[in-house]
Amino acid sequence: MITGYTKSLSILPFDHRASYISGLFGWKEPLNVEQALKVAESKQVIYEGFKKAALSRENAGILVDEQYGISILRDAVQQGTITAVSVEKSGQDEFDFAYGNDFAQHIEAIQPTFAKVLVRYNPEGDSTMNQRQAERLKRLSDYLHQSQRLFLFELLVPAESQQLEHVDHNKDAYDTQLRPRLMVQAIEELRHAGIEPDVWKIEGLDQSSDCQNIVEVAHKNGGENVGLIVLGRGASEERVIHWLQTAASVPGFIGFAVGRTSFWKAVVDFEAKRLSLDAAALQIARNFEEWNQVFEAGRNKSGVAAI
Image 1 (spheres, rainbow, N blue to C red):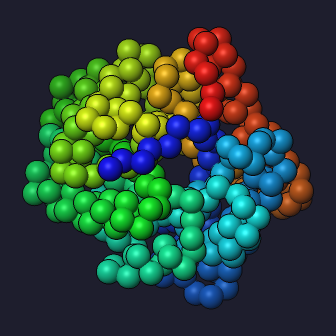
Image 2: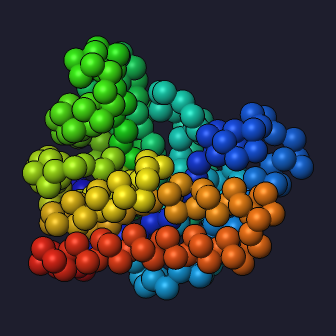
């Protein structure tokens, strides 16, 4: 039985770990205590930005990791904020649990609204690895449904080398010509393996027809109430706005999760002491508000009703 999630959903994700630490501080894990505290403090700046944003708390939430964001998660849960916590090991090509077989205890200790996984799955990629990933994900999916917790699935479909060759190594061409079909195929395969998220978090698509195909495959065979949200992929503001507008015009898309494009520059400037904590948080809040306005405007323009 798939519960699904149909309410509007605006998420500020800052569960980045390996890429965040290396990109922002030039460090590699394992970190010492002082470094870990520095990373946690920088994530607090993003959380302050979220709290400053003028968005309805019924529909706005955060996605953050337990490792560096545990105090943020505790505070947000206490405030009744929508929370999502990442369950996967960071920076891995193959999905595995961050806390091994203890994943359930970690989820139960935090009590988030959503448990979230980031999965790289190309249906034309390594079939043995895909099968291993699917088996682990099925275990998580079953646990979440049995414990009546919501499941947020972030699907990335990275290009295989032969696919890039097919488009003369043009990544934009891969995104527009090949990725949409592969995303549909990936969702079909994952659902066939018994993995049933309540919300799919997917890479932006340039055509509304591609968005419609994704909704169709997510909604069939009992998935009518499953929501879809668009991720930002650290893209430019213009690109993010285009993806949001495209998705907003298609029923079934309920919102977005835009992280690095919301917070990266502000956190870099805060760490370099070019911005105060308050000014950095305000910049993040304004970006987050902008994505929400763009998505809602796209919905209104196309007559898609929000819940």
